[in-house]
Image: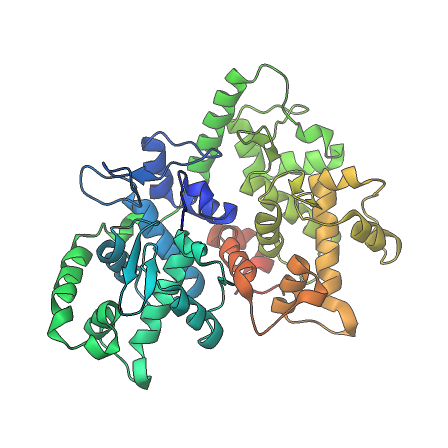
Length: 441
């Protein structure tokens, strides 16, 4: 199976990549190693040229990134069911954290793959018979070389072992069974593996190093530095300006927003000449603070009596467009609303606070946010009754005909994770409608 990865970006999804950059110590470690956000991040290689996902010893770096993957998988799929340190320690023993590791099992007549050394048939069994279907191989065994998929199935198997035969099992049983199967969990042949596991687990970096988030001041300062650096290199006048895609009234509301005005002042913006941030491909995008402000303004001005939440709108924008002004792929704008849908909402459903005369209008953040909120409200109230939040979110992401309330799928889980970027306790004091759990109402 000839698979090769050179960069992290080649083996994980863009939103997963963003999730890793959002872990403060991961971004700090990558930047220390010369990596740049918005560009491809190198996977480490050992002296023999084999790709690996880092360790804590002097000759290695980026262990924090691998541990962060385990933490993200646990947070998304297995909160309270497994410890990320168990995953990291077993990955160390099984593959030396090499995502492309392969080992042929003569007894099973099959090949163990990836970081957690998962058999494809085990992954298929977990997905089809045990309900662990957030990722699906569907005959493509090479997906097990991707870190997020592999760690997901490895964690799922560990959880299954923890209640094997409907009994609560000890950590020792689970670890030894992972190595030799349930029949060898108490056999002397797996004892050494258990002892090595304890030693490795003890040596792992503290999980505390992965906790915490950057403050508004830290994020703003970083953005200011990035814009200053980009400005010194950008002499071609290729910036996109807020003032060209927002009305004077909307721009006045943005400048009157205390968090936005502070950010824009820190980055050297001036009224009438406010630049969008850009990635390495010169694509303009909104900062999270800008996105949140747009959502707040739209809801306060046009939907103040409706059961919509700022954080829900922002989380949808996060996973659908990654906050890019023009959207991603065929879905335009930050909210990914199709032109035909926006026209229908305007003409037939009476949402007319913003005119929509062409598809280009949906690249305007306030227009896209307004029609995104309008569509979300329509989904919430369709069929003459309030729909459950999970239905509304799935319908918005994938279309009403593709909703499956029995299987949330990875996109809904990513939505739940994106919510955490915007549900800040300090902000909920100013936005009481955003207090509470992960719901729309």
